[in-house]
Each structure stands twice: as structure tokens, then as C-alpha cells.
Image (cartoon, rainbow, N blue to C red; front, side):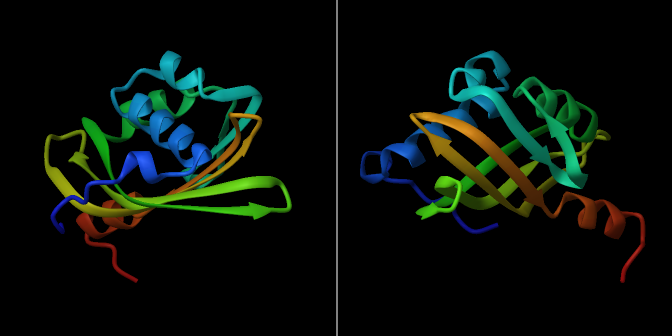
Length: 140
């Protein structure tokens, strides 16, 4: 995996700082702190189309999928979209599978919609499923 980049937090737009802080809390994991960054009625669509309404949902799912997992946040892109302010966070996942085998370089992209200082929508994609298939000898 490439050397981790240092994000210039102070240079990030406000919406990207909200997303950054949400992701930091999520990685601890501290879903109750992460919940302070989301709006009532937030919709979190996780890998595989799993839908959650609170950060504790992805935390519980990740506890089944990984022994532990963190994000090497590489970039934040902010744009105005049809739904409001859209923030993309991209980078790599690293951690250990349930059996303790370490991994890194697992690409991720998270897409957020931020309104009035709160996350109202989150969509999550990453390469974990592909890596699990490859580890089991299943290649396309």
C-alpha cells in the first residue's frame, strides 16, 4: 500500500470536515459519536445494498466481516449535486480478516450528501467482496 497521505484538515470545506470526523468516529469504532454527525432519518447504504438508519448498523456488520478495519483516507471531493452538497471520500481499507490475516490496499469510495451541517445520506463501496472471493480461489 502507498505511504499514507496527510490530509490538510484545515483546508477541507466544512462538509468534508464533517465527513472526515464522522469517518474517524466510525473507525474507533464509536457509533454513538458518529451519530452526532448524521441527521435524523439518515440513510446509510452499505456494500451489498444493506441499508441502515444509524452508524451502529455498519459497525455491527463490520464486526462480522473483519477482526478490525480502518480507512486510509486519501482524498475528499466536494460538489453541488441534485440532492445537495455531495462529498466523496476515497482511499484504502486496511485491517485484518476474521481469522486474523492482515490486509491492506483495499480500495473504497464513500459518497455522502450533507445538508445543514449533517450527513443525510451515505453510500459505501469497497473491494472487500472481491478480495474474499480471490482468497477462496474464485477469480473471474
